[in-house]
Picture (tube, rainbow, N blue to C red):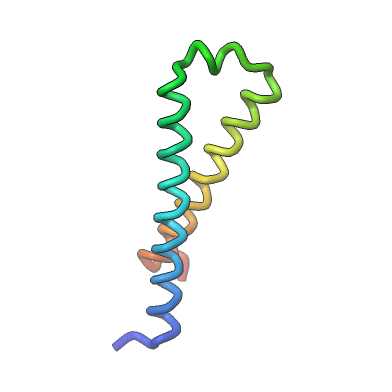
Length: 73
């Protein structure tokens, strides 16, 4: 049987994974709705900010997943 602290850690990781993937999905959906034409009209700094945000959320989701599946222990 797994300890309560391990179960709590996994539940927190699952919540974090869901949060980051939901944000990433919504953000990419917004970009898709406005179209790539809109994205390409943005200045370089804003494009980098959008892509950096997506990458950060994807990295955080991946990190949460490794906690969830136990790969980080």
